[in-house]
Amino acid sequence: MTTDLTRFAQSIFQAQPFSMFLGAELTSVGRDSAEIRVVNRPEIQQQHGFVHGGVLSYLADNALTFAGGLALGGDALTAEYKINYIRPAVGDLVVARAEATATTRRQAVCQCSVYVVSEQGEEHLVAVAQGTIVRAANQES
Image 1 (cartoon, helix red, strand yellow):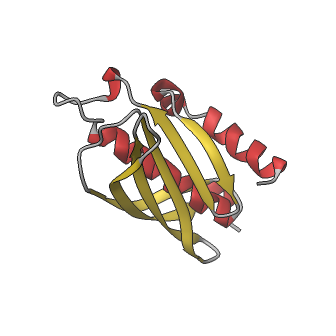
Image 2 (tube, rainbow, N blue to C red; image 1 turned 120 degrees about the vertical axis):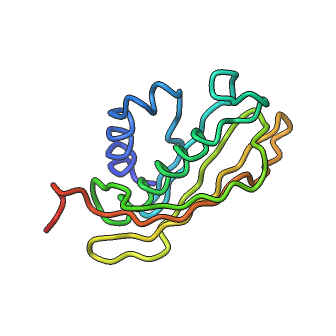
């Protein structure tokens, strides 16, 4: 991970009020990948004590967009995505890892896996997502 790439990605992430509100962290980036984490706490849970599906969806969407944007070399937006919830998210930490699997000049198709991490460090897959990410209008060439 280069310093310039990290600085670029962090500047975009820090400019997202919703990410800051959730307490999310962009913990890793590569030229076509990203990892975002959020600590599980009661405020992001639903009535059964599971991490709310909306939080899992946010993590997948944002990780997909970062992976796609980095693969495209600039600012990007989600054109579409689909998420499958696999099991209830119960754990201390929620981690979304995404990577671009196919890239053209204007779009990237990306995949994301969302995990919960137990106190012992065990990861359990809770959701998978796939999305199409496009260059932001100000990035069109």
